[in-house]
Image (cartoon, rainbow, N blue to C red; front, side, top):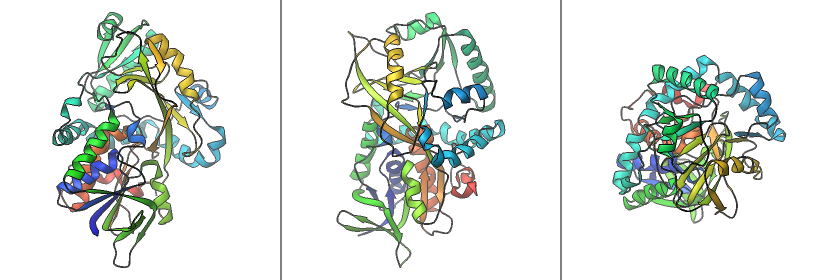
Length: 415
């Protein structure tokens, strides 16, 4: 059977693209080595970050760079052995993180980010899971006045430039919003507009079930076997033979460059790895919203599986063995902040965030490869941007007028 489109990768980005293509009358097959939402889409903090217009920059302060380089800060962990292979990507990331570069990236991110909740809501209604949305925002917690004052200044600037909303919260206000925190804070910033879910993996699977209900199918296959056929279509090798389609979309997150490199297309793709662990809570303690410990760079949020602790970024080779040292470093701080009890998971979960140097995704056609498209590189916002980038990709592929100018997401923008 030949489909109109094969989507390689069944994470949040891939399944969302498949649904939007399906809505526009295309027959679609999802291809993955596993099931829906089982990789990076499973392990995030569950926040749809409608405030996340300004991307995370490469640090340019010399003092902070030195601290990161020698693994002195818990929010980051560097594998020195990975530097030879990661240096080209890191250098481009550094160059893209100037003030002007950040402004360009924020301008490119804004139309996607601002539409992220609306697009999730649409899919959730169709999948019958819109009740899972928690409209509580999230808290950024500060222990020291200086850090809080700097954060207020930055957020005020971002509000003026990009419309990012925030509210200052006093120490008493923090206690009122989150009465089960066991540590006192100087103040907090409430980001009121983001929403969250108690199980991002389950949301991805619900989108997958909607795709199947509407006639889509999932095939097990190896994306790295992608090749163009003699009639101009595309095929990969599946568990039960060749899987064919007239067009193909690469939505493989941090593995996307494996496929593109084989087809003689180079992209400067890196990954920031991250870990999570679930915990039980003592007594009836719970969190009303996700909370970010700004001193230590981790997020705590109440999930279906327990209280999830999600770490910051590990800069390492994508497929290096897990080294969850950040989790071990921040867990004591998390236990001081909230009454965590026992670890739930047998081992920490590891995910890989796919990052292009300007922290914008690649969405659109592959130059010189008729019928081949991409949708990857959503860095820390894959869960947030899956549905809206899927919509944009589907509009472009089907010839519909795109809801925003897609030039900022061109695959060949890096030269």
